[in-house]
Image (cartoon, rainbow, N blue to C red; front, side, top):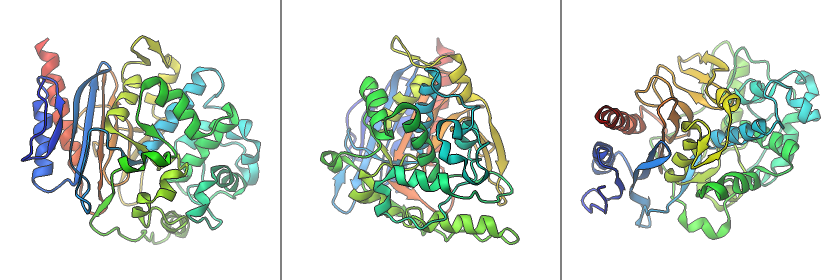
Length: 392
C-alpha cells in the first residue's frame, strides 16, 4: 500500500498495490491545473483499493481538501434515490411497472395516470420543469414542490427529456408515500447509518465546514434554443431559471441550498462513501454478509428502460433511474457501466460483472468544453483492475 501526502502534487490518501497508475493520473490533474480539489475512490469486491484526495476545498480561503471533505454531487443524488426505490421494491412495497398514481393518486391529474414508476425514473414523466414559479426559498418544502408536479399539466414533448431537478421530487414523494419517511431521513436511516457513509440529502448545519466550495471553469452557456421545437426550448429555459439553480450553479455553495432536500441534485457526500454505496450493486446486492438486494432488483438497475439521442447528438440510456454506458463512455472503457454522473464532472457507479465500484468528486465544475477528468481516472482504474485480475 502506498500512502501519505506528496506536497509537490498535493495528493493525500492511498492506493492498493497495482493501482499506482490511478494515483499518477489524479496527481497529474492537480499538477497541470485541470483540478482545483477532488477525491477519487474505488472498491473491488467491496474492498477499497483507491482512496485519494487532494488540492483545495476552498481556494479563496486556502483550505486544503482533507480526508473527510464532502462535496455536492449534483445528479449523482439521482442514483442514491434510485437505490432507495430499489430497496422498497426488494421489500415488496413498490412495483416499477405500477402507475405512479397507484402510490400517489394526485399525480394522475391532467392525463398522467398511466405513467409508471419505471417511466418516471427514466425521465418519461413529462414534467421535467415547473410551470409555476419556484424560488430558492421554496426548496425548503419538498412536499409542496412534489404537489406542484402532481397538479401540473405535462409538457407535450416529442421524446424523453432529462428531469434535471424534478426527478428528485418525484422519487422523494414516491418514497414518502410508500414508506412514510422523507428522502433525507430514509437515506440516513437505511443507507448512511448501516453502511457508515458520509452522505446527506439535507445537510446538518454543524457539518457545513466540511463541504468543499464549488468553482466554475468556463462560463455557463445560456439555455439552448431549438428551432422548430418551442416546447423543448421553453422547458430548457425553465430548467435554467425556475428555480435558478442550474442557471446559477454557485447557489449550491449556500447554506440555504445545502439544508434543503433536493433529491435530484443536492446530495452531499465523499467519494469514499459513494464508491462504497455502489459496492452494494457491484457485489450483486450483498456486502459484508448483508443481503441488500435480490436478483429482480439488481436486474432493474442493469436493464435498459429507455434510450434516446438529443437533437444535438447526445446519447442517453437509462435503467430504472440509473444512467447506463453510451458511446460517449461516461463510465470509462468498460463495456457496461451503471450509476449516475453529476453536473460539472462528478461520476459515480459500477461496472456490472466485475465487482468494481467508483466515485469521482471534484469541486471545479467544467461548464463549457470537453471534460476528460473522470474518463482518464476510470481508464487508469480499468487498466489496473485488468492487470490485477490477469495476475491472479
